[in-house]
Length: 170
Image (cartoon, rainbow, N blue to C red; front, side, top):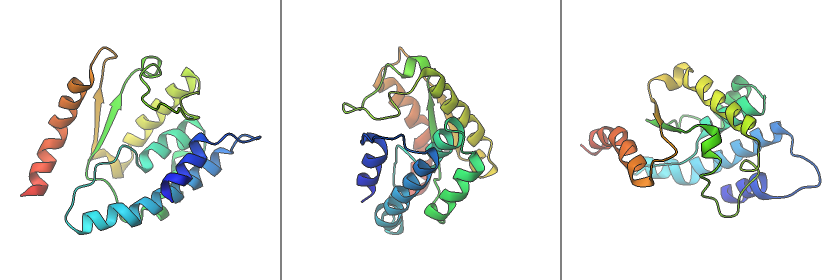
């Protein structure tokens, strides 16, 4: 269900442009489904969940770049996430001009076709989200250079993740 919702939001071509507030609610619905069917059961069973997106992505994109407001997006998502929040957030920052040339989605999506200016607005949205009291303690920004290869970035990420994994596994 969650993947289908995301595909509708990101990859479906419509005769009209999807309103940004529609994005907010659909991503929150997808998130609620994933959290209730995958994340919560895994955590409740003692497992560790690593995700490449969270409500923080919506704060940056819909709240920041799409101008729906960080607080509005946070309010909608609080209902979707309930009490499930990350222990750690890693934000891999790359200059938006450079990052637009490092996409890994073969099919593409509506975000990859946005302008460089839009991507700078997303980056600003992440900066605003990082200042939220609920995120300050778990936020880790890693700046990556466009010349860095994947193993180098992975090593930088592991340096941040490893202490938490060690603590959890004890």
